[in-house]
Length: 455
Image 1 (cartoon, one colour):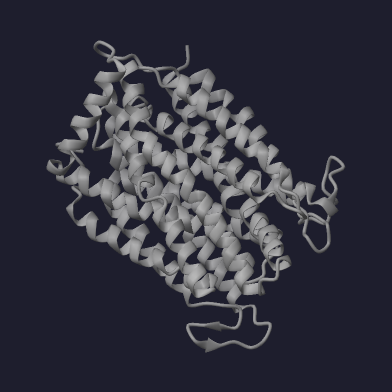
Image 2 (cartoon, rainbow, N blue to C red):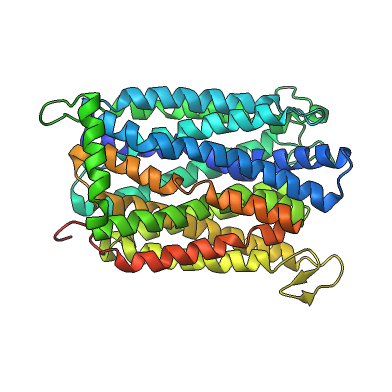
């Protein structure tokens, strides 16, 4: 039987195993590769370069919108059903399969005559798998340790996940992902395993690599983390859905929980959009290669790992709310810089041709996105624990997922529409500033200790 320490470390390994979907696929490798391929495709159809880049960003956004709507509709229902039956591990197995199949399908996005729809569908399937598996693993968190340890556990888990993301990114850049111009990896090698650089097989291998990484590193989770015992009788499907309906009806009267869920709708959605479009932006606006974006990702992920570990300690001492508020302000500043910067100017101030200042500023933004993004996610997980009980944790984290996905279509959709209407990737990011500000206003009504009487 696994010890308490092994259970905690097994739970950490889900973050390690699943993080590459965000790091490699959403942000730093596949996302920019998709943008590059789609941009070339639309340019080949006769679009001007900037319009082709905006259209590629829009398609990427619409695809994430569809996945977000599916997650928002099903998350609280699945959570209620899992709590009612007392079975959570079986759902983790099911959605892990979706993760693996979706990631593997990204291999088939060819650089010429691309199957963009298949790529978007595969990415969406894997994203749905990751998000739903996260709901059920997060719901196990209250059973791992004492209440006062939640901040440290959540922060350490995210930090461990970031470390996994960094290592997976280094491996991809050093051994697989080729520079489109030279065909060499970051350290000057041909892609390993005989992969054909001319067909971008090194970069396309990010899908199977992410799937295999997940399979291998989920083993400690499945060996050490067991189903918590359900206290009381099991509830039928009808009873579980009825309980969910009653919970939803009572939300307006639970001011702190309601305000928190509403706030997290906006700041987590905006953060996910920032992750999803950061690499696309760097590719289209600054002209970065996949390897440059990968270095950007390593810097951001290292900053995220350190900041999230520190943030977990601050969370344990001061509570999650100050960590959330501070992180959101940092992300607002980052968005303002991104909107105000292009290759030839920063906030209207012209730059000398070939200036490296935009690159340096973007690297700085990457550090801040990694640091603030990691800390806000870890503290958010703790704050949700403060608003629930172990018996209703999956239902609560289903609502938490709903709050992150009910408006999940808004940020990508707003970016897609703003990109379409303006024909500019820079202007397309601007709506995120407003969404982050709405989140800050709603946090005013969130109690620092949630619905717990004491810390």
